Image 1 (cartoon, chains in turn brown, blue, yellow, purple):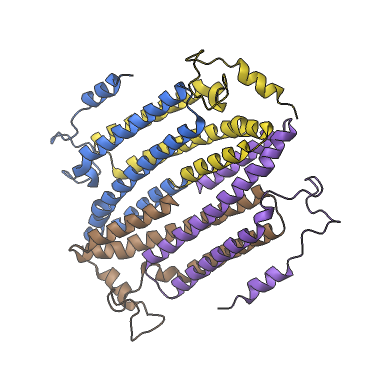
Image 2: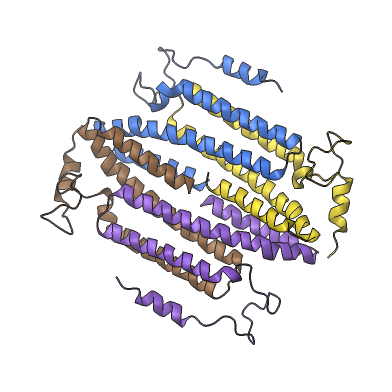
Length: 124
Length: 124
Length: 124
Length: 124
């Protein structure tokens, strides 16, 4: 029932932008979000999705057959959902789990917030 | 159209809370799942969805216009997703949060499992 | 560019309920919807889905593990989507295609209606 | 963050409407796809989505709170689905309806193809 590992991880994670002035005052000083470690991977994924969207523009511009464009839209949507799922997993593993460990009402708010985010993903 | 079969089925279901014979030995004795308190509400929701599905059968049987059937399918799917979201919320609030509090590796397995369940919901 | 086959099919299809009084006055007399021929198959599918929903009730009643219930919800949602897709395919093949053949403004209304139905399926 | 690359890419795209060299020999000469008239609108939409994806990269780079990123992902997915629906509507109105009017087996292939595209959109 110890939180030492999580704490150590959170504390040792450097703030990449403003070491003296945390950007998210609502979060404990020095805390970074769950996805921090996968940042490079996330950016790579998003750049690939950006490339897919540019590919869609090219397809429209070149009068590609509608169905082929739709196939590419499905691939881009899938890639976005996949990115969202990874982000969500890290959020649950870090932010939500940390709130549970800290105790109090915070976990309720965090779970409520995460569920609403999942609902938004499902409804799109 | 009678509901006798469904009623009979519901009535014949044994009480799962016999204190002497736990059904889920993999869970701590006495532990019930997160959705336990909302059980009556869940069953009510599911019976309503069952009614919608029977309504769909009636529509097909009566040669209802395709688009009207599709509208009812969307409503049923939405109701199922809504049920899933509530179950998921309770799961996060109880099972996942409890695993976080207990510490150790369990939280990783729980988050992994929950994320896979969310992925399955998204992909349907 | 002949519509003979489609017409013959529509005309020969018996109205299973009220041979003298068409139920859908907005549709040509004697016309049945695209899914008519697959009616038995559709009813079988829907009964299977109804069974899945009853299975969900049993799972909740027996305190089945949340994640296992979510897996079953995903399966039911998938089955409903699959039913919707088949219905939609038949609708496009018959109702929408027939409107195109008949000419005039009807095709616009039919396509608009079908697109809205697809949007509702996507948003659930 | 500059948009030079995107601009360059867009500018270098050749004009697809060279009347002497049809790019899609499988389609009747002079035929353009259903979405042709909305081309400018589609490109505008896609550029907006591209902007959203770049916004996501900025959010990840600036350690934005996970849930806020997920909200933006949902917005982008919704925008992509919305684009797909418009494309699909035009496809049904033109390509599918035209096949119906031409008669023969083509309508079956077109409807089959469109249904598969809708299935792919639903499953993402």
